[in-house]
Length: 316
Image 1 (cartoon, rainbow, N blue to C red):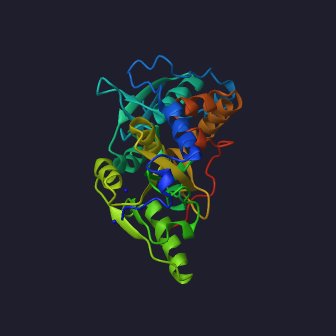
Image 2: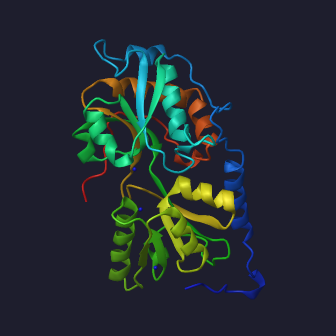
Image 3: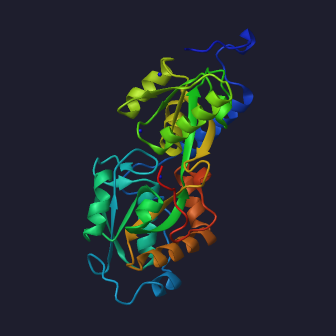
């Protein structure tokens, strides 16, 4: 769509997880345990040629390279997009979606690695046909780009395994906590809005901690300098499953109190969005979309239907 240790209420709990928390941790571990980060991606789910999606392409649409869908993607963190074990191939849920859209349209795929802040200019200038890189739909972006949704924008709260916190779902749950988040982000806005509600209700304020990278944030949480970490769900869930030091205690839609979606971005008025939306809906209906999200542990972020240019987040 970027700052006190707690004591357990009952000595009998010690430092172990509750049964429900352990079950949740196991679910995450199972979801991510078999993730394939090899460049070959032998278990990638492939799409069939989609006549309806091809028919939706404008007759005069010109691809950057004829016969090829050129897609910009930023190598961020797993499971959405990251470098494979060869340190050069981009793999992840977003890369899989790009491959499937190209296959559905009967095209080859050219994945172009870009720095995330650079995608808007590159798309407008015609360097690539589409951007698939965890881009959230906003009303401001819709003035320049068209969108085809393919995932929910979801943020997650994660705590240490030995934390007494078992649920963060609403404003009152963050009162008095030290929470890591990203400065200037949508998730920071949510926490600040929740904090306003808490202060108005006479509850303790939240303290926000900011770190430049995920490693520093991870160490702050594990060392007890923070009570929780709130950022995009996928990478934090992946980290929790891989290292088994943290667990999820809640998720919030990135658009709170509205709904935010992640979408493929294309040039405004190019007509490509309709074809990509049609191809995505075919993948949803035939089950390959769900299989792909499950492959990357992102089933929680599934949309029921792909939409072209849905209501986006307003400017805040």
